[in-house]
Length: 285
Image (cartoon, rainbow, N blue to C red; front, side, top):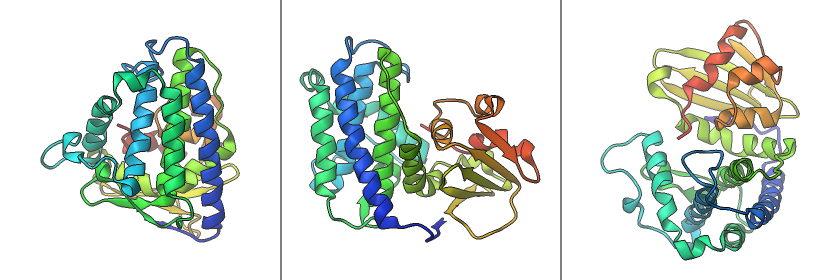
């Protein structure tokens, strides 16, 4: 995995922090407007309230790398050897129990408090500062830039899940989507490769996001590398898309084939027919 240096990492990280701060406040407002937290959300079988509790737990997890508030990872992680998907699925399923019933009565306040905590404890740290993330793997740490991008993605996408269930408006702007893609995808996509489906496969995709970033995704015999703003090379398939569409596809909020049919994602390059295979190489627990 690598990222090229044709962008200002510090400036982009500050933009991501500002976007996260605004998104956390919007999410808190959305939760205040929810009439019934027990209605189904956009990610069944979770309710709208379940999604809000999950976001709070995510904020606690990332902040705990600095606050050490939660360290009992053995209680939420699977035992023995486990894949990335199994670890994340286990944490997701058990994360709801970390937020008690009493706390669920004021999820809007808790989201705001926990989101602000992450921003406060990471204030002034460099984008490449390490953040321990045991739910991604033993002894795994990602950069603060990637963690901030993931916090932003969780806020934006789960805000969408809540809004869909509660039938309330929620907007993901192209600029916010670009920040998620640029800050987190080069780190997270290699973790999420579906090794069984990618075994024996050797393909190079050029993800050309309108307005940036541009991502070179190379799948090579069960392993994926993602390079931002890569030097020129030969690609098997180019996928041109707007940032919001790619974000929704990457996190399984809309199917790739539907985006292609609607013209929101346009295949090209030497082998454009490979575009529909792209999302199948990655898991989203």
